[in-house]
Length: 206
Image (cartoon, rainbow, N blue to C red):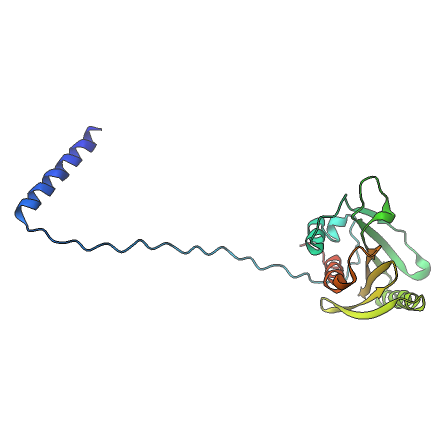
């Protein structure tokens, strides 16, 4: 404390002497301090890269994470996703199948899900494509509207039925299908949402 007082006293004496021996010189106003510009760091968003998924996941978070689902829909779905693991069907060349049910309200069951995403694997690429073609033909014969759409860099088929709309396609030995149950997503938003979910479903987490 004493050291601080001593420095202040010397400073006052120096100012007095200087004022007595030199004429006053007008001081120019110092420029205002520069405010540093802070640029927030930018991280490039990862674009989903679709790949064949011969080893099917056993968790819906590895298909379409809930966070991605809600962000894509623009709303938070109720409940937790439920996964159903299907059985192999050698007769049609299917080697695996899973279905993820999103948006099941409390105390409700699988039929009440808003969105269902299914992945299946087959013995070879031709069998996978054939299964998709057969499904599309059956829906068309049942009166559904069928349209080819882009799914990332791949192609898929949008099928619009009376109570359900689905986007189906294949990549390698895998097939994907995204179902919009009970017209949950309005028709005007189908092309903005279903391809995004389909692309994500075929993109394994890093």
